[in-house]
Image (tube, rainbow, N blue to C red; front, side, top):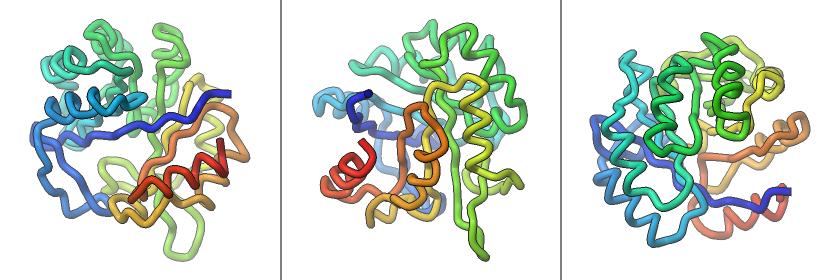
Length: 219
């Protein structure tokens, strides 16, 4: 069994570092390279960097920024944002990134997961699922920073992504993003019961006890 990992997730918007609340109310919080240096000192297990402008604006990954991030990073680095082809993934790996994260591209072209995994290995392919509660109950997947809803069952799609070759799934709860009231354990339970690849939960952490709670319950 993998040991628990604590993974800071940095959102890049307008080339700066931002935080959000429920995928709205974006606030500038600094320079992403400085944040990476800080988490180096804090000895984070891994770091995820997501360019949240890339897919929304249909632009390619900023390779120079990724190169600079990888140069500064002293821990495994996972990058996501704008990746649509195996060639882009290969170039990003050549810059020193250990994992590739895909989200909307995996919905538009699920076979991309398999294609990238064949080249770099399953363990290096991460699918990020942004999920939100429906008004009348249940869950739905959103893409493009919560702007576009998809009529796809999240649990079944997680199983499909696993079968296609993803090595890890990040469950990002839009309802809990930036609220700092704790993780949605009931939401996480639904996924843990159905898939057997590593799951990372994102959205809701406010203090150490929240992290302890989710690790104690799920390992």
